[in-house]
Amino acid sequence: MLFRGHPARPGWRARLREDVDAAIARDPAVRSRTEVVLAYSGMHAVWAYRLHHALWVRGHRLTARLLSQAARAATGVEIHPGAIIGRRFFIDHGMGVVIGETAEIGDDVMLYHDVTLGGRSLNRTKRHPTLGDGVVVGAGARVLGPVVVGAGAQIGANAVVVRDVPERAVVVGVPGQVRVIPPDEQPPAAEPAVDPAIWI
Image (cartoon, rainbow, N blue to C red; front, top):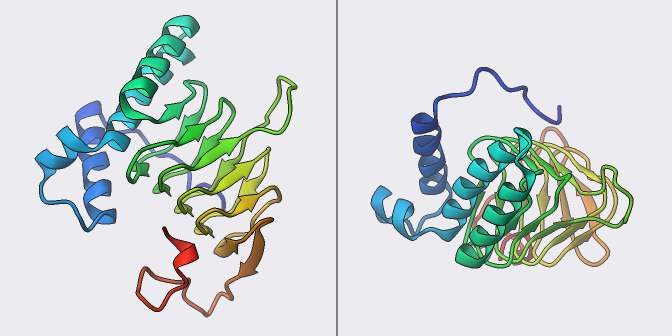
């Protein structure tokens, strides 16, 4: 299953709390909710995206693009207002991330710094990746073209992905080499014994 489906969306206050909770759950360096709200540029970029995406879908395309560029200047994260991003999305370290116009990101996805979800075509069509629910993308990774990364997959640091990735798979290297995790095996966890290429 790529996406779990989206029941009724919570109000904006609940959505902000949900985003902060996601950051706290995924970053052991967090000291307080206040710190996340005030000091996490990845969080600021996501919140700015939610605003300029709302303008984009209402047809205010130029205003949306101008706001997205202002957010890029302030946070170091470029998210096109046309991208579709699910709930509890977290960008750790929040610098150098680029998310293209036709990218689609499921719920509970985490990106580290310097990730590109980019295109490989100049045609005005679906040209950016689709990430399923629960995907983790390591620092410096490039996911290029209209590829589909299945739910629960992990893309290692600096990997280059140009082909579809199955659910629960691990991808490392250039070009990305896929290792499918058998259903009865747990995917790698963030422990010292895990290959550091999975993370940062």
